[in-house]
Length: 222
Image (cartoon, rainbow, N blue to C red; front, side, top):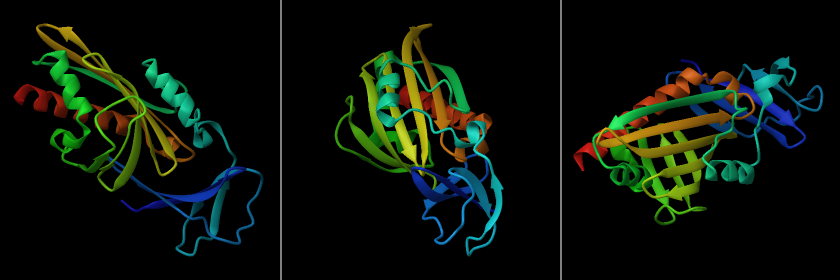
């Protein structure tokens, strides 16, 4: 599908978001064109031609410009096992895994091995083993993502916050004994000007479902 380019501006600055729709949308952030006469203190607009002319404007309404809490606040939320409940894009799921909670948790925490969990994940770089405050970067398809752990409780809880091209994600995973194995549950949210308004919860749900299935497959074969 064709890439859609949006200009966003506010008191914090301006940039262009290039969104390619699809089941797993790709997103890139670009510098804003110079010399545009922008209406109002904040807004969003579609950029239809390659020279960056302003084609259409929109007022800052609802989820379109919702940025969510600051990164430190999000880390505090996920540390308590909570996500951004006000985020316009949300997804959740759970799956039963025929493996002990400690093994399932280890699969989640071993970020270097995430490409085994899902084929579109690559170029994972971490500053060490999973720990609260530890950072790692990774790619999902064409999207480069920076993440920070907010909760690292072996065999029980793993949570982190991610940023990518102006969007902020929360991810909270819980493992608990169930039926001789593990119930693995996940909640994720996405917030960010323009991005979250254009990426539906159904698209995020695809990511959650495929990730849970991948963790199950790896944990049951280790």
